[in-house]
Length: 68
Image (cartoon, rainbow, N blue to C red; front, side, top):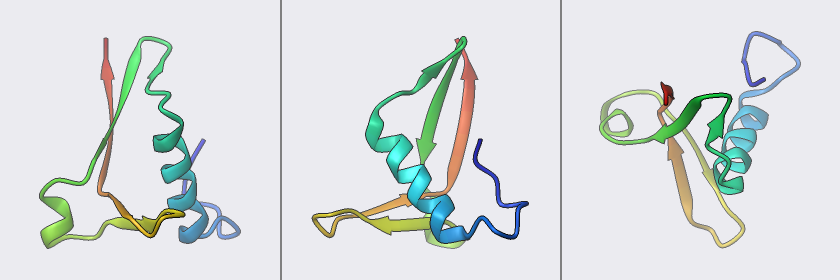
């Protein structure tokens, strides 16, 4: 479970875990599909970003669970 309510769990760790989850490719869990989105939120609001091993930036603005 990913959450920022624990003061010992930093935003950097949270972002890294988002990236690892996205990179893993697992996006179906117990009848739900996980959707990562960066779309328009990255232009105007707060979002999480991380650079991978090749220096490519990945941005996360919204995590959505869609019932299948």
